[in-house]
Length: 108
Length: 110
Image (cartoon, rainbow over all chains, first blue to last red; front, side, top):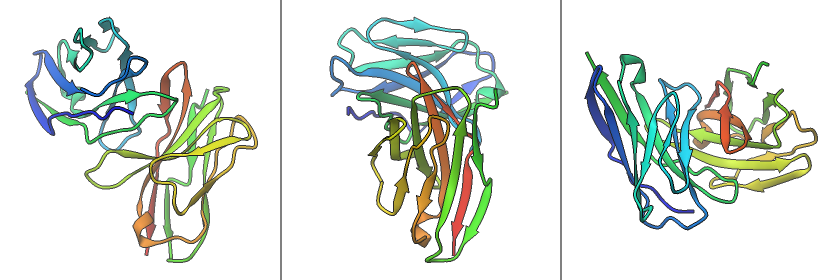
């Protein structure tokens, strides 16, 4: 399974867009990119996933580069409740392997 | 739907004791998995199951056993608890690429 690299922490002002990067340079053609977040030691929560194309849902947008070696999760209007650890995961063969994630702090 | 439920929420064991962490889901999901999370770290996959009667190892399976006799239940057994197994344990079930996590069990081994 491809490994991912994320910055350990980021800050974002409330109401602004939060852009969380992820590198996955060894990703294979059949591996999806997933994003989950974990708020204050709760169970992780699914956000979004994609293979090649950009994706958008009610929570976020996922931008995947053309070579698929990196991606960016975008929270368009971050709120204080978006403060969490965000995990970028590349999944294949049914297993999710979590990395260290990015701790996002949304500040007033 | 209750979703994914885990019991107990908290547990303290002595070294060498055995116990079973319970996990149940009422969503009829085939795929279930167990993770542990240590302070300041991400989740590490212990074991997973793609359906009743089928289980496989994850990243850190040593010291843990699982079985999957029904679609609903996926218990995790610690045969002889060790202080290194102090952690928060999360169970998850999956449907169409989305995993749903339980609230976790906080285990302390003294």
